[in-house]
Structures are given as C-alpha cells and as structure tokens.
Image (cartoon, rainbow, N blue to C red):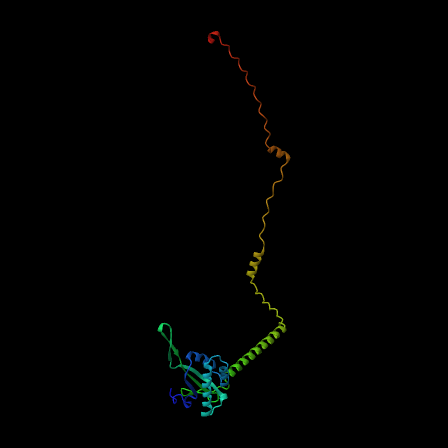
Length: 250
C-alpha cells in the first residue's frame, strides 16, 4: 500500500501497521474484532486483560497509531476512535522436524500484517473524498445514553398510562337519556276495519247433544234372551235279534 494513497490528507485517518508479526492471521482477527469501534482507552483495557499472546503485539501497533496522531497531526488521544482494524496473512516460514523411520514432517510458522486506522471525533473522517460528520460522543457513550433515554421514556409512558386508567375508573358514567318514542303512524279507515274483522273470533258451532241413557226396560229388550237347552229325544228301543233256526245254524 502506498503512503500517499492512504494519507491523512485524503482519508482523514491515522494509520499504523506492523508486518511479519509471529502469529497467525486468524488468531489476530479474533482480538481485533473486540477492539474495533472502541475509543483508545477502552481498547487498551481490552488488550491488557486479553488472554491471547498476540494482544501484546496489537497493543504496540495501537500505541504507534496514537503517537502518529498526536505528534504528526496534533490530535488529542482522548478524541481518537479505532475506525478499522484488520490482519492480513504474511509470509509462512517453513521448518522441518525429524520423525520415525528417517522421515521428516513440515512445520508452518505463519506471520501476519496488523493494520489499525484511527479517526478523530472532533474532525470527521474523509472517505472517498467526502467528509463524514463527526459524532458528539464516543460510540459506547452514545449507545449508553440512548439506552438510558429509552428506559426513561418507557417509564414515563407507563406512568401516564396508569394515571389515565385511574382517571377513567374514577369518573362515573353519564346517565343515559331515555330514547324518544316515535309517534305511531295513523292507520287508514280501511286498515282499521280489516284489523277489527281479523281480531273478532270465529263463531263456535253448538256441540251435538249426546242421547240420554236408555231405561232399564229398553236395555232389557235390547239384551238377547238366554238360550234354553234343547230337550233330548228318548232313544228308540232296540229290537231283539231273531233267534236263528236250526237249519240256519247248520
């Protein structure tokens, strides 16, 4: 990267870079992701308590960037924020280790190039020839202020809602006025006559009278006479059989 292309006059960013740091780019990126977007003081605290060994090398690069901003451009360290921090892969150093049966295994000792870009809060950064507006506070402070304001607003809304509910329950409901009755429409004479005729009940027919109960004599006449048993005729006397003669016997 040429120094003229990424100079402070064109970008508004202060740059510091360390090349061939004895660490892999993957390990360095994990640490750089924690300090990206923080101000210088918070970033130094994060690097101080980081358990990774590459954090010491990154802290040296951050010191170099702050010194460049303070000495070369006259910026205050308190107003500086880490605009961008990234790590690129460097040269891989190859070494060999003897193994069993006369073999050798290769060892890759990787390196990385660490770059940190700082911007000032008082003077906005210039990106692609356009100057960005400088925020009033650091990103962490502004985020905290927004959270506090949002919580206060939510509490105020809850209190006002509770007060409105209490007022609505205290107020008595207004007495309802009786609804005005509508005047009945005047019926015509023909309609009134029809209504009277419809309302009259139909004349009931006289019920047929049941005949009076018959007298005892009539009942006796109507009852069938008891049948008398028929007289049996005497049976005719049997004639004695004529005695057979001797001739007939023989």
